[in-house]
Image (cartoon, rainbow, N blue to C red; front, side):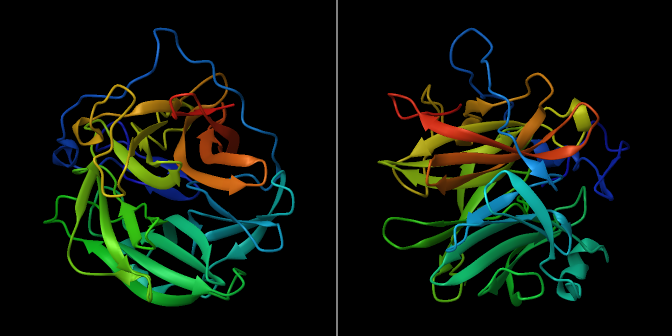
Length: 334
């Protein structure tokens, strides 16, 4: 999700919400990094065909045990969509149709909740989601669980991590990782000093201890982490640059990798992501503007990169592309 625009005074309305840039001090990391392999501008495929209710922002998706798909995305009380075939999508209500009063100290009373992360483990759906206001890092990440994933079936499990205005990080854009040793981790972060990682207690899904790792930073803007293990590597996907400016958005999907969930993550050129490194996976092309806030879905036909992008008319839409790995183990869309 995040807090982003051209100037502090500028604002744009998207899905009924106002987006604004954080203070200049929030983006004080070195303005370095962000590599595109080769001299030529990459040629990216168009998103796969999707139909129906495809207006989303910050999408996350799981494949349910019955083979259907459940999507959660930024919206009033967290919006839900379903699909039987990963093509046709329909609205499925909201996570908290009665509201989420525990989030209002962070949202200023708004019911718009941001950037959910959805997973299915041990017979339960886990949903981490964000509450904040634009331009502020007085933010919080909460957890909800459900046995069905349906609207109104979710139980609030409470606060996981928060950030205050005195902190140098922003507690939004969560993503759950369960590593090869069965340890649970939550990555998160938007602007300020970048992407962070904390350990969780697998029994509760809540924070364990006070340890916090720094994974990545990029001065012009970084957020929306998603970590997935493939082969020998943990891949950290992030979004660089600016979201939420309609067809003028400059969001792009970047990646690095590490042998450990806690890093260090480096890009294809070997540049550390904590120093602005990142290998570009997807960027604006044609009528696809500002693709980002990515998630990786493991499906029967391989990995899928799921994201939002802006159409020429400024609408925020669901994007899906196949995700492959080249001979050196670096991801690409096709």
